[in-house]
Length: 127
Image (cartoon, rainbow, N blue to C red; front, side):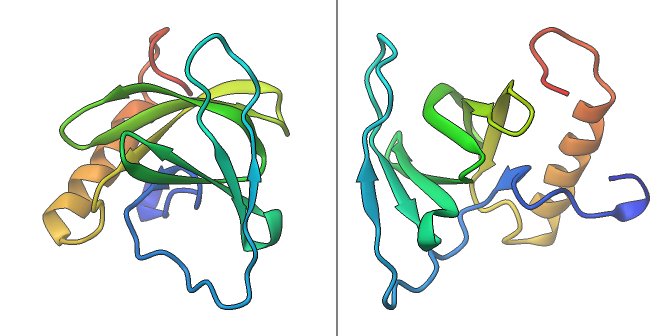
């Protein structure tokens, strides 16, 4: 992310318009039991992505993040969920920032937060 490089596509989830649903089938997949409320998962884009409805917001992640996706918190700028990255077998936190790139000020704020978080070394901040 140094030098103005864009973050990975799955690093920040924005409230972009949903992709067209022409001829795409979606399949319900129940989330695994966790002792906390199960959040239903819907496969999309031929199974490459999984959608969740968290706090009334569509939260879409790549299929490498295996269910269950669990909400950690909600704030003024977005929602944070925990997930398991099946490629690295690491538990991660994913933050969805509402309207992250709708205007230049919010876009700069979002990128600044990402850059700052990458330099933090704290147990409550994922690398």
